[in-house]
Length: 194
Image (cartoon, rainbow, N blue to C red; front, side):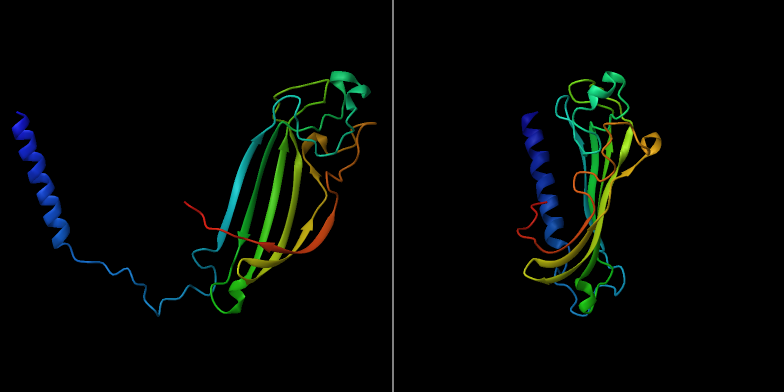
């Protein structure tokens, strides 16, 4: 029985080897005349998304409520804008595939916050929507991984029933950084393994 299995395996390997040798070779060289499309080439979109969970006693603080918010109502304090969950990401759009316009790109980076927690007073796993912090900008690729970027960061936008003043502990909607605009240089390096 073992001998028949070996004969079968050997004949199968030989047939696979023969078919591989007789298969026509495929040219891996790219056609020199092939160019990307002018508008919206295949690699127009690049980005990433990330989901974060903050364990109890380590909540994400978007700086919308004072750290001592629990003193203004205990577990029923109206200002409970400390996040348990965050969904964030980055999307880069490079709409041009040819000419010098291919160096141009537009990007956006939103961060959505969810939760209902008051430090040292109330710890829940509630997925209540808090709001969104977002920024966008434009960039121009210079050379060797360097990009010139202009970024606009907006104020925090509250969502739903939390889009109002929530009492004495409410710090307003400036968020952790407030509103600002920057001009900078971005450097990329290395290559992705996958």
